[in-house]
Amino acid sequence: MSTISRSLIALALAGVLSGGAYAATSPDDAQISAAVREQINEKPSLKFYNISVRTVRGVVYLEGLVDTTVDQGEAEAIAGAVPGVAKVYDELAVSGNG
Image 1 (spheres, helix red, strand yellow):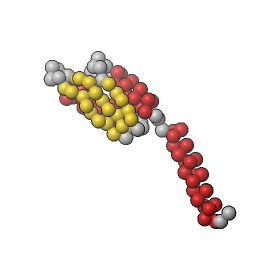
Image 2 (cartoon, one colour):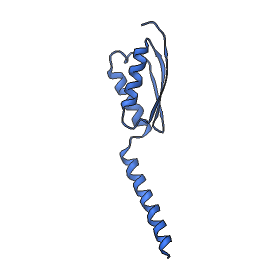
Image 3 (cartoon, one colour):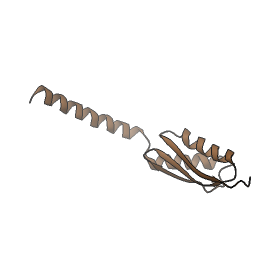
Image 4 (cartoon, one colour):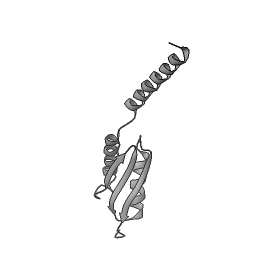
């Protein structure tokens, strides 16, 4: 086996092993969604809204209806602070009732 072949095999093996280590330490989408929901439900001003949380590849999508832009901003900030979240798409509608 040539030196180049051995080097390529070593690089491939290192990539597989490092990817496995990363996957073991980073939260998956279900864990991220659960953590965002939990954080939102701990906030008294947000827990009564029916905010839907969906996560795809670390990107969180917030959907639902809130009363104010302050509530909307709080939900987005909470989601963005959860470990593993790469981006937040705030698709919350503001009713303007509050």
